Structure formats: C-alpha cells, structure tokens
Image (cartoon, rainbow, N blue to C red; front, side, top):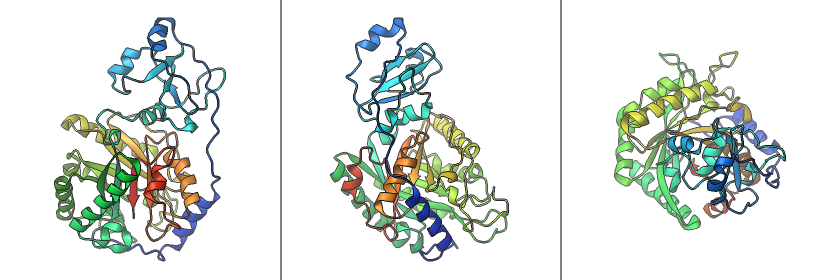
Amino acid sequence: MPVVRRPGARPAFLALALTSMLLLAAGAPGASSPAEAQVPPEQQASVAARLPTPQPGGFTYGRAGTSDLASLAAAQRFPVEAVFLIDPEGDYLVYRPSAPAWANTLTADRLHPASLVVLRRALGGPSGSMFERAQVVSFYGYPGIASMGELGEHSPERAADLVAQAAAEYAAAGGGEVIPAFHLIIAVAQPQPGADGTYLYRMPRALLEQYVELARDRGMQVFLDVQIGHSDPLSEVQLVEWALQEPFVHVALDPEFDTRADAAARTPGQVIGRLAESDVDAVQGYLGGLVRQHGLPPKALVLHQFMEDMLPNPVYDDVPEVEIVIDMDGFGDRNAKLSKYEAFALGPYAERAGIKLFYDWDIDLLLPSELQALPTPPDLVIYQ
C-alpha cells in the first residue's frame, strides 16, 4: 500500500520546507530602462515596421545563434507577431506586453545573455500548448489515501466534479478558460526498498486507467507524478507510455523523494532529495519523441520545488515539444509562498509557472482571485 503522509508524520520535512520559505527575501529585481539593440541593416525596415512602444517589463531576450528571422520562424519556436531586435552577435530582444518585470534586465552596452528557455516561456511556449489558451487547475494525491492529497478524499467522479468547480472559480476570477485536471501520484516513495530496491509503490494500471478514461470523458488533463525514490525517472515514465500516448496526459517529477545521490543512501523521507539536470533532459527527450511519433500536442513536464538545491543545476535542454513547469511546492503563509513562487516558478529555467496550495497546511490559503490578480498568474494550480 502507498505510504501515508500525515501532517504530523514528517516533522523534519515540515521544518525544512517552512524554514526555507521564510528565509527567502521577498521581491523581484527592479526593472530598468531597456537599452537600444543593434539591428542588422538588412532587417531594419521589417523590424521597425512592427516595433511597439517600449514598456517596463515588456522585453525578453536570449541568444539565437543566428540572425536569420526566417530560420527562427521555420523552427516554430516563436509566434509570428513577435518583434525581434537582433545584434550582429546573434543576441535578440523580443517585446511582449505580458513579459514579467524580472525579464527586463538589459545592460547599457548589450543584451543580457539569457537562455532560450526564458524567451520561450515568456512568449507562450510551443504551438499547440494547452497553456496557450488556458490555465489548468488540478487535484493532487493517491486514490483512497486522504492524507496524501485531495484526490484521496473523494471517489473519481466526485473529485472530477469538485475540481471542475474549482476551475470555474479561476475562470470567473480571471476571465479566461481554465481546464480541470487529475494529478495522480503513480509511483509513491516508500520507507522500505521493496523487491526491486526502488523504494517505490506503483499504482496498478487498472486504477490509473479508470482516471484516464474519466478524464477523457470529462475533457480533463492528467498529470502522472513520479516520486523517484532510488529508481530512474526515465524508466518510471516509460512504464506508462501507454497513457502518455494520450494527448491530455503529462508527467511530473518530485525531487523531494529522489535520494539516489545521498551519500548515506538514505530512504526517501529521511532527507530532501535532488534531481539532476541529466534526468530532466532524458525525460524531456523521451516525451519529445512521443509527441513527434504520435502527432501529439506538447507535453508538460512538472518539476516540484520548494528549496533551491532540489534542482541543483537547472539548465535544461530546449525541447520544443515539452514545456517545463516549475511548481512552487512549499507550504506556509502567503508572503512566503509568493516569494518562493517568484523565485522558482518565475525563474529563468521555468517555461511555465505552477503553484501548489495546501488545504490543511497553508496559513491563510491564497484565493483564486488573488492568484489571478498577480502580475504573472500561475499556468498550473495544484490543490493538495
């Protein structure tokens, strides 16, 4: 059976998570006035015709590796309405009114060499992404285990009804489309190694199929969450390839329970784990291959984070078919949560922003109207 995670059962985890949140200084880097970029002469006319009036926080930047706009468009990485100012070295500047203020950190002499990931997230991600048209609101957990999250509190049908109601609240507060979702822990970390030494309990396929079919009938999304333990993330994801061939099924990885790298080889739950960038890129590459092979829309890859070293070197491959969602997974008071949300979910390695809300553990639970009023509302909201 899955291990039960009760609020009082992990005092070390609770203290570490909350301490980490409370120690973070609030606030984002201040915006500065954008500098003029050098535009290659052959592109001045086409760029000038579409150049908008600069606004603070409206610029994102990166290195293209080429000054050829046609090549960028052919790669389908950016929408056609994007405006590029490209200097002779291949740096580019893109204007978008909704770009977050932290993106505007241009220096006076040249464009800041940010990663392509920052640009793609600010512009909305690859074509066909569900996040292009909607937010997603999900219920998290393991069926039948109430202490593991909201999904465990209800039957599948009742959970579908309730998360649809939650999505409707976000739609009313934000004025846009919001899609309900199941967030299922399909590989649950255990205190014992088990027969295969992975410290995981895997959800039976028949149970997972029940939720996948219900999601299909209800027009929902599904996230398959792997707590890793001592297993290999790619191997665990490959076990559910049959489900990932569905256009509405995505993946989540939880570094908290990835204890493979711990020197003492401790069991999950004794220390807070960390997830290597090589594992993230391996899963990204696999998901990208599935998308291309089966003609699917882009997949979301959710990475949970509430401490900086859970993702120790977050420099990931740019896989156009996959959008990395950083879920600010910590609990606590609203100021600490929003500070962590800005630091992690809106960080330069996040293509999409996510936040987890804890019905029982958060202090003064954030409301849909408050999240929708943020300068950059979350693309994904998870209720545990």
